[in-house]
Length: 335
Figure 1 (cartoon, helix red, strand yellow):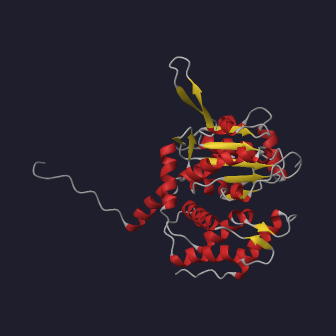
Figure 2 (tube, helix red, strand yellow):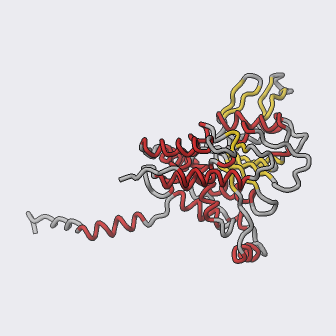
Figure 3 (tube, rainbow, N blue to C red):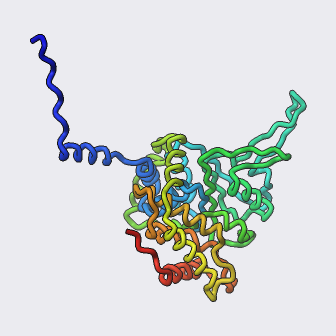
């Protein structure tokens, strides 16, 4: 009929709006997609996978210290595949040179000019296997890469790709012919982690899955580098109240006052703790920092920064110092 328009659509009720919002929130986040993809390769290690993802979002570096064959290299490769990034592996040996990591300038026979040949450090995820087998000079070549995200060769600076994560492994047994990481090198790592042996069910699942196929081959990128960089930016933007920041500072200072500790957590360790806690909060869907985020990351971030008076002290001793600091330091109550 002329002159009669189409009746307007009825407005959504509050209940219908809640249903739509809930349905949208059911969509997995980029972090959840990455965790699932990596979990399809590394069985039964949800907490460990979450910790590595936290460090990656916080733009830090990871030190994995564990026995051979527990999946350290597979873990790093799975993360690279899940974020659609590149991965390079460096097998550290005593004869490895700094230029074998960073790259070198080579003479171009056609033009007669020097041309920079990038080394394996030019990747999103760099695996430095058995880093303590490399000489101190070669270990130091990673310092600028890890701290500045760049390489300088012959006075020319080359920017490394983003995201950029160094995953270094150490073997706690068979320590002959190794060079212990100096404090300055350990301080560059945001977190230290042990994967440990899988439980019986997880190990059986691994055996069954790999009888006819390699799970790593099935991992596809679940996000782009640009999308993942956006996740990094959001994690960095998480709001931190002054009381929570001071809580992290007091934890670090508590390790310096412990009688068994010669060198406590450095100010860099405090910064790394706050950055990692922000990434943890982001993964939980919050844009604000909680003291619980700091607590959750302290046991992974602080212990390897400590230097004990006893030269034979184990990593567990440093972890116990951090646990005591957590127990004695009162966390702020956020309202």
